[in-house]
Length: 125
Image (cartoon, rainbow, N blue to C red; front, side):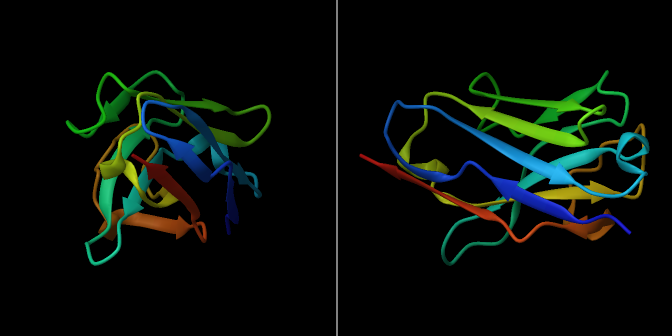
């Protein structure tokens, strides 16, 4: 069992930055790939970024590539998402998820085993 708790969301002006964190409990964190998803009002949940269990490989959605950076600290059981150059289209609830895989990034909600409750990011224009 893995419990995930996101933090770091809030209100930011367009062009600003935020850093999200996802604290994980349990002993399997380092053996699981972790992925970030987001859900805007009235839209489906979508993939944002992912990182393998070792942290060697990452994957980004086209809409955030070059602006967002995903990282992890396995010693602290924590996942991060650094978000720069935010715009109004980034407004959403952001969720971290623990994958059933270690070295594979699937970018789909169906193959995530555990989810956090989300943290709201609001970007004002």
